Amino acid sequence: MAASQSEVLKLADACLYVFHNRDEASRVKLTKEIFHPDTTMYEHDRVTTGYEGLEGRMRELIAGNDFEFKPASEPVVNHGLVCIDWTFGPPAGEPVLEGTDITLTEDGKIRKLWVNFKP
Image 1 (cartoon, helix red, strand yellow):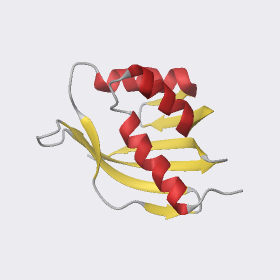
Image 2 (tube, rainbow, N blue to C red):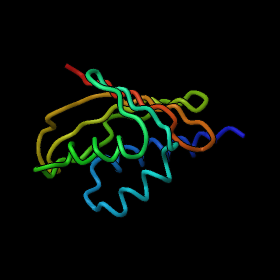
Image 3 (spheres, rainbow, N blue to C red):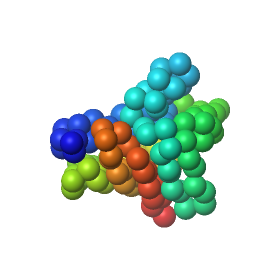
Image 4 (cartoon, rainbow, N blue to C red):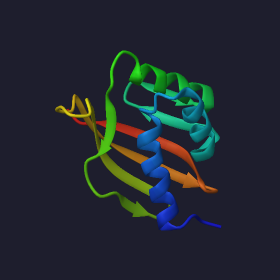
């Protein structure tokens, strides 16, 4: 059964949150709740797969800073595909990075994630 629009929106929101969650135990737990074990994440310079790959990338993103991801627009949903604009930066400052995530949901979990950085 396909996930509802509200379910895929919750997954997309959780995806933004999990990538800046600094509590390792809850981050790992949430990662397993929202991603397929063989999830593939595509960035402009790399492809990351599986829980271990995602966890490694999350650690890289939060190392040495207090930056967080924030939604920058209302998500667009189309049959399990979600497109959401985001910013990444200090909680009270200007973002250092902006982009768009596209998530594809299958069986109630994120199966693919495309991360697009804005110039």
